[in-house]
Length: 263
Image 1 (cartoon, rainbow, N blue to C red):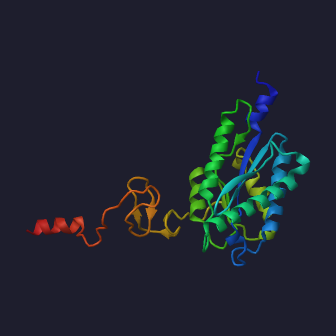
Image 2: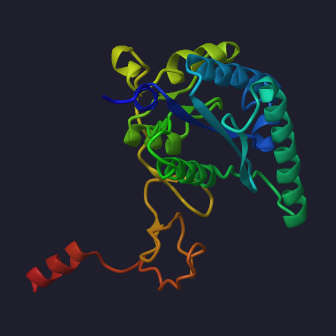
Image 3: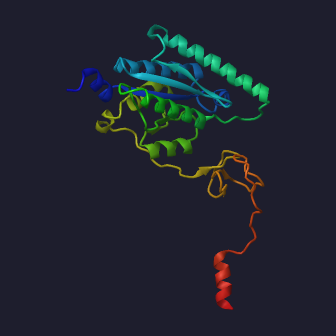
């Protein structure tokens, strides 16, 4: 017979990895969102508490995503329950100060892009470490759920949620953000089969260039590391490979075949 504790862990215990964008360029712009960062954190904290209240063995890990760095800011398995809010807010404040300090040291100008790919890599590494920790561990949520608060949709998050079978949501009423988080993202994977969750109206499958982070229809791809660029470059900024001259005026293959047939 399967022990009670082992069955409990395999059936009901979940590990929730939460990635939060703390980019000040986004939160400081009034046109980006009508929700302040402090109010946003209050909704998130209530959501994290609700997840942990569902099962005493549930685990929540929060990763802060800035425009210079990303880092773990909270882990419920190593934080006292009575100091949950204080620990999270203090870690967030320390992270924001660190992220801004790196901007001053590197003299970053203009709008910085959040290092979402870096925080996703950290989340996957943490999940892999959990799988190797032993037989009794919470079950990670492999699907990527996305909650977008900005004015524009995120093609990257749309694709990530669609490919992994997660939920992509852009809430209309930000004052009720906690209700969105608890009813849509708070449910475990087993319970989702019995719920009518939001379905994507459309997914933008276009790629984004590595040089300007713009969504493009056609571009140049590095044959070594598969980095995408909207314009021709002499050298790949990702792997350093040297490119050849762009063949913009070269006749197409169909034209060459047509000329050969005519002769």
